[in-house]
Amino acid sequence: MEPLHHECGIVMLRLLKPASYYRKICSDSFAGLHRLYLMMEKQKNRGQEGAGIAGVKLQASPGEEYMYRERALGSGAISEIFDGLTEKFSKFTPEQLADDEFVARNCPFACDLYLGHLRYSSGGTHSISEVHPFLRRNNWRAKNLALCGNFTITNADEVFQEIISHGQHPRNYQSTYFMLEQVGHRLDREVERVFRIAEDMGLKGLDITHYIEDNIDIANVLRTSAPIWDGGYVVGGITGSGESFAIRDPWGIRTAFWYSDGDVIALASERPALQNALNVSADRIHELEPGQALVINKKGEMRLEQIIEPKANLSCSFERVYFSRGNDIDIYRERKELGHQLVDSVLDAVDGDIDHTVFSFIPNTAEVASFGLVQGFEEYLNRQKMQQIRELGPNASDEDMERILSRRIRNEKVAWKDIKLRTFITAGDSRNALAQHVYDITYGTINPGIDNLVVIDDSIVRGTTLRESIISILDRLGPKRIVIVSSSPQVRYPDYYGIDMSSMDHFIAFKAALELLHDRGMWHIATDVYRKCREQLNKPAAERVNCVKEIYDRFTPEEISGKIVELLTPEGCKAEIRIVYQTLDGLHKACPNHLGDWYFSGDFPTPGGTLLVNKAFIDYYEKNYK
Image (cartoon, rainbow, N blue to C red; front, side):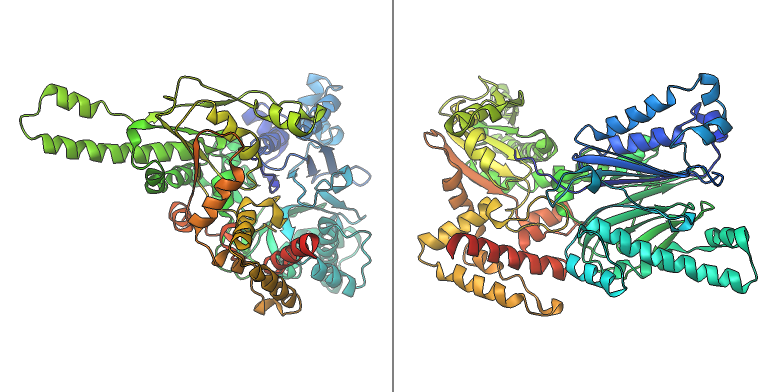
């Protein structure tokens, strides 16, 4: 119900055949660009603050441009970039665009190698200079570097100091920029290493250049750059001489998938982007493993390199619950299972009265979880029917059989997203009143005063939309009880790996826990946690613990849910409100291969994340109570 901004999207594409091949096979002189466009559009559910692309031509002559970049801001950035390229190409005749040599010489971005990025800034800054890919220029092709990533580095200070220690003087403190300089510095050293070998072999002039470009090893660059990075990331890059790479963090927090055949090598943040753009089945697409890099040399030869020893596999479970496109077959199944896992809890919430309960969902991203919840209730109802039929015995009447068999789970679409209201023209109570009309409701789906209404959501983070609009909207239908169901557990902690949840006071579960401390005369626990968090700041990384857990340890999840109900129930609501959350156990059963749950459990996978959650509580406490 509350849209969360989240991590970026990345695309990398290497064409392995000459342009004439793709024109013959696809009747398309710009097959690479069109595939890049599709892969980016199919990930538009990710970062929507900006987009950028970079490309490299391998056959450019000296004096000709060989490395290109275009960037744009806003949710329409992809269209702006590619519409701009279309306009540039429109000045050429069809005959010219059918001439491969003409296209290669005269058309920008008629490249062999591409990098694409969809940006969301977890730091909240919005300018074209901060849109990826970042570009580092040099007169040696091999030293040119374009870099982009889906990442948040939690030890930025340490990385920055490491760069300074090598004598560099970065011009700003943005993490992407100084990572570009760090990787660029190691790329320079790799070029110089191969240069010395070429000199020892007696090579001169362009022969040295060709030797460098044919023998540079990007894996060496990554081994001397990436191990210091703490956080969740997939970082991709291309060089001016045609090498490319993508590396995934050793915990597997952020996702990346790759595909290779004789025509192309491609990588994307989400599997369906590759499936749709390249028309391949899921079983032919591979996941980049934690700590692993996909490296492609100038010749188009690909290999996988283990750059960092993999840690415990803690890939982001929120990616499965909410962020990724639901048409990935594994994510679709997992979201259905998340709903299925909630049957017993919802059954308790409606006191077992399924004959007077209507099921629905808000928003659309919760639809698949709704399928799983309803399927689970249908299975439960079928078991009831079988038991009732057995109890009738062999002489059951047709009327009795019809009465039993006619029972159904009532699944309705009770709310429809209508329009994006322009609430900026007003404020206060008027703004909240307008917010109550964001959804239209389907009157007649509920028997007023008799039926329960169960509405499933994928997550409840801040609770603002529930309190200000959704519950009041649903209450107009006149249900006896409204049960709000979250297919994910209570969000209790910030995220520091790419999701826009970094402040403690964003979370309704955190507010509820603090209210319970006040109500029960236990506020000294919050003061003790503040003191312990400050002590953590000076501890070595290996000894850090998340002290904020102690805030929640005093209460059961049910107690916190009960207080959340009090905080979110709007004044004048007639229906009884209950809230049901997924359990951590249910989450892990539904997503057994994606155990990263730090925003729910507080178990941060990296020392940097643990440090930052303690800092977040310190900031909150000092802002509000000192």
